[in-house]
Amino acid sequence: MAAAKQLPGPQELSDEEREAVEMLLYRLADDEFVIADRYTEWQVYAPTLESDLALANIAQDELGHARLWYDLLEDFGYDEPDLIWERDPAAWRHSTLCELPFADGDWADVIVRSYLYDEAEFIRLQALEDSSYPRLRDRVEKVLSEERYHREHARSWLERLCEDDDTRARMQDAVDRLLPYALTLFAPTDEEVEDRIDDLGLRTENLLSMREAWLDEVVPTLEANGLHVEEAQLPEQYDVHHADLDLPDEVGRDTSHTDAWFELHEDFTRSYRELGRHKAAKIMKDPDDE
Image (cartoon, rainbow, N blue to C red; front, side, top):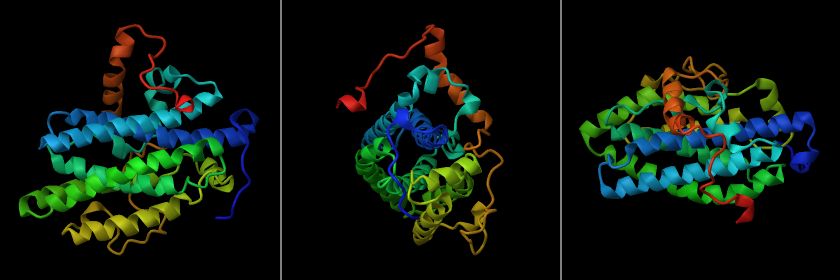
């Protein structure tokens, strides 16, 4: 992808530039916020104290990353209630992989989901390192450094759980269930806006090339650990340039969501609503002040 001109600050963007920046930021922020909220459901239920603490730290990291991206959306006049607590759940842009409830008591679900998500997250962050939007580019390094740890944690557990026949079978069930939803991480929000994101140089790889890199990473890794992708609705000889890889009915990026999302949204906004809040108390410093 050819190098693009550097974009100006948020107040100098054209309407089309602003729309592209906002859409990219919603992709980033919504994924991180929603998957972090799901991770918190495993507190005190993980199989070891070490894994419990590790997942708690990962959830905290992901919430911090979401805050970095939502903070950039506040440049355009939004505030935290607009972006999270009072936003219509039907307007969220996260992948449906992030919103699915975990299989009851199944640590394999956590690990497969984490692995698929973290590999995708790492690839898309690398595509932002040379973004034409300086406000976004300046925050990528911090996020990448923490995502490296997340990948290592997921890979380590994946290998560990695949050493035993019984747990490998549960891992296979999780792959079959989750891999089609993981493909939605690379689904477009709006085709025209996604093309503009690429043309403006907001990212240096498009969705198709990132999906190719992701599949080239995750499929051999899964297979090396005795897992198979053919049961997960991928073509027998998967062609990453084929536009019609099977996707679930609910993609998330296009604001189509599962019923589980609306239940989750109801849960994490309940206290805000029941307390009659109209603004959110800040629990983290503004990243620009750090």
